[in-house]
Every structure is written in structure tokens, then in C-alpha cells.
Amino acid sequence: MQNEDLATQTIERKQRHVELCLEGDVDFNKRSGFERYEFRHNAVPELNLNEIDLSTTFLSKKINYPLMISSMTGGYNGATQVNAMLAEACEALNIPLGIGSMRQALESEAHRESFSVVRKVAPTIPIFANIGAAEVAAGLSTAQTKLLVDLVRADALIVHLNAAQELFQPEGNTNFKGFLGELRKLCKRLSVPVIAKEVGNGISGEVAKRLIDAGVRAIDVAGAGGTNWQKVEVLRYEERFNRDERFTEGGFAELMNWGIPTAECLEDLRLLRRRKAYRSIQVIASGGISNGVEIAKALALGADIAALAKPFLKAAFEPDGAEAVKAFALRLMNDLRATMFLVGAKTIKALKIEKIAERRG
Ligand SMILES: Cc1cc2nc3c(=O)[nH]c(=O)nc-3n(C[C@H](O)[C@H](O)[C@H](O)COP(=O)(O)O)c2cc1C
Image (cartoon, rainbow, N blue to C red; front, side, top):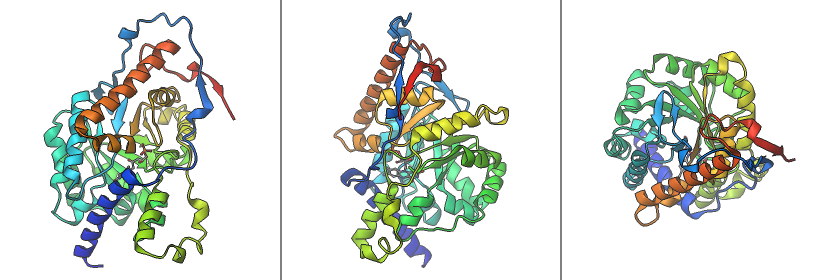
């Protein structure tokens, strides 16, 4: 395919992803795993609710809440406005923002503004650039990595691992060969930390270990239970092709709910971080997180911060999007604070696994 066609295809795909996530049934038919945990109620919290401190540090930056808006969009016409609203809310809250895959910015100069706008609107918060594993595996040049980081003055680069999505994507790139070697080189030469992230199929402890050994400084587990990219890509496939051609013959139907539930990934990473060499790695909990109690559970299971994607996208499409995003984030944090009160945890650090009493199933 010609470079120009490829660039046009990427632009169309990025726009359709957002539309399908807003309109379609694109959630997993299984849950993120937090329902298996119950906090132990503390009848004597010995705390003043107003003194509970939700601030924390992520990748050496002080942030007001253990919350982040996960990578979503950029690279098409309407993305500038969406990213500006997300950035405005994050700046007001002093929380990190991940932007969507910047592959489109590498393919053409059109729509670069849809990425760079976040730094204009949010000059002070941590912003994370984003690129896919397939692009890393193919080998990024120094000029390309510089462009990714410079365009948003990024504090870190997220590399997203999306093998299942590429597998289900009509035009997906399923060549991940040589990825770890290229990742190692990238981590070495980059001036900012690298974060490895899934997109909804989860990262196991064993995979996290390999990523950390290659040089990444943080893992965003992005586990199963929320947005399901197998479903999103099947919807796109059905729009463009005869579904039977690929999905019935290949037996892909059995893989529609493939993925490690988010809470299970966190358990794995908690065990990994008991080992001295992996203790300093930072962990982002994401994938199907929908309320403040789940955020509290994620933190108690060892995550440093929690991240949500689709729920924030939906808020951004409400009237006065930036305000709606901010209000939703504050509602999550209010519920987190209330949960911390009821378990007697004054700080994020005090939210520990011991506060969880039951594990079901
Ligand atoms: C519209 C949309 C676009 C996304 N695009 C990207 C992307 O470009 N890069 C990436 O790393 N993740 C992307 N994601 C995945 C999210 O960052 C997140 O890992 C996933 O949606 C699970 O979180 P959720 O259940 O809270 O939505 C996207 C998610 C949505 C909803």
C-alpha cells in the first residue's frame, strides 16, 4: 500500500474507533475481577475525612490524585477538540494524561495539531506520548522517536501492546517479531522513561518481567473487563467485509473475550514487585475500572495509580465536555476518599492489601 493510502487509512480508523466506542456494544462479556474482593469495614477509622490525602507521586512527578486519563485519540480532524477537553480537565486536576497512538503523526504531517494541542492546553501536567508495539518492532528511527516526544513535550513514552487488536483488525499488523530487542534499544536511547501498556487484554507478571528487563519503568496492565478491542475491530470488519470470511473459519469467535482480568494482572505484579530488582517499577491499574471503590481496590492490590479510558471519552462528549470530564474524575476521587475513610487509610500508601478481607471465587 502507498504511504498516502496508509496515512488515510490510519486517519479513518482513529475516527471510527472513537465513534464505535461511543455508540457500540464494545465491552467485555467478563468482568475486571475487582468484584472478587471486599474491603474489611473499619468501625473505628480514627480519621478525619477532610484530612485524607489523595496526592501521590508518579514517575517522580507530584500529582493531586492517583488517577490518569488513559491513551485514546489523536490523528484526525475532530480529535483536536477531544484532546483539548481531556487536557483541560487533567490540567485543572493536576493528573497525568496519556494521548492516543501517534502513528498517524509519523505517517503524515496532517493533524499533528490534534496531539500538540494537549501541551498547549496543559503546560504543567505529566503527558505521555504513545506508539504501538508493531511500530517499535519495525524499528523507529531517532528522528521518529524525537518527533513523538517533542510534539507534546512528553514526560514519558507509552508503548502499547495490542497483539489481539492487531489480530482482529482487518488491516492489522501481526508481525511482533524482534519487539523486545527494539524496545531495549528504544529504552536506552530515549531521554524519558518508557511505560509498557496493554489495551485491554492484560499484562501477566511473567510478561511484565520481560518488559522491565528490557528497560521499561512502568507497566499499565490495561486488563480485560472494560473496552474490548476484539469487539471494536469486529464491528469495523463487519462494516467493510463479509464477516464469515475470517471469523468463522479461523475460530476467532472463541477469542472474543480473550484477556487477563485487570485484578488478576495486579496480583501478578504484586508478587513480582516483592523481588528486590522489580520493587521500584510503577504500576498503573486500568481496564474496566468504573468507580472509586474499584480504584481503592486497585491501589490496595499494589497499583500506584488507576487509569480509565472509555468512561472519560463518554464524559468528553457530553455538553461542556471538559467540565463533565472533571466532574466525573472528582466523583471517582470522592468515592475513593470515602472508601479510604471506611477502611481507615489516611494516605494512598496506607491502602494496603491487608485492608481487603475477602477474596471470592
Ligand atoms: C476510543 C479509544 C481509543 C483508544 N486508543 C488507544 C491508543 O491509541 N493507544 C493506546 O495505548 N490505547 C488506546 N486505547 C485503549 C485505552 O487506553 C485502554 O487501555 C482501554 O480502553 C481499557 O480501558 P477502559 O476499559 O477504561 O476503556 C483506546 C481506548 C479508547 C476507548
